[in-house]
Image (cartoon, rainbow, N blue to C red):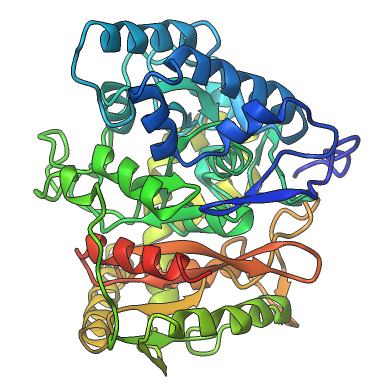
Length: 492
């Protein structure tokens, strides 16, 4: 459980700027606004400054390290820092540019990698004391691609233990706090990544999403999180190369930066046999598109899920923004019957990958992880087969629905960011939540259909807490999904 005193002495952020999207300006008492302004620029703007030699990669790195020093002690997003290797990587970027070498799409951009991903020569704990001192000798595929594209690695971003649960705390590094209100959760599992982006500690960040782990922290931190179609971003290393619910994906402070990072992450790889064949270059620069006359659907509760009134109020105010695109908005959703059984069974089945650790390190694992592994071990072959069948039915119902509607708009989460002392919400608007994942159904209902989805900043509650709008697109049409998301974001 996160500690109640985790926010003691921390600041509550109050002042914000608009640089493409609403972004944190740091917090009360911060100085050196010039560096901070640089750190909050869109990643593609930083790239232009470096390519034009107005700034060097080393200067950009120093500005971001200064921002980390100002902000990270109160928020605990980047754990650990790679201060030994980052300056050398920035110097290599500058030397490559000086000799006229081809520059990668992330050239000189500071970045951090989710602590679930192996990173060469940087501690990779998975948020677990079992692996507190593990230092891999090879990068995950996502990290490989970001490094090869010229990104400069600042460190790792905090995550829940094994990525389980959308609240970022663990026994290795502690709790990551929400920069909009440090008494609240930042979400998860890509919580550290979202906070680092929102506060300008990094320019781009990767994350992963099984039940909502790119979209939930995007929602809770007022940034953009994109769950792509499965196979768009190859997963490696991966123990289930042919099936699964989880995918890696991009996060950014605006849609164009998300598209830029997706262009680096996407594309086939022989180590990932289920990867899609289209090249990443498809996504950047993101082509313009007119959505006038398009028919979209709006569902306030995905067919009857409980939703906190504060979330409903923000999304009701945001909905007219969509109409400014001259689209037809229908109140509708597909039938999500079977989503609960399918997702819970398949998630529990995936958790059995940790069963060997349960047998040897049970006392070092948090109880929700233990419970979920045991749920998986209790499944029969018939249970898993039925879940896969229901998943297939859900896919086809969503596919048919999106043949009529180009997108489905709905809540990202059913609640605003909750207090850090709460491990997970146990009720929503008077409805009890039976398990640690029940409060996230608005995310994982979409996961189990297999369709891409993006979390877009939509507004704030009366208490100043971020609320996001989830936009679900057609299977495989990640390009159209991002084009619609950018068009919508521009209306704000």
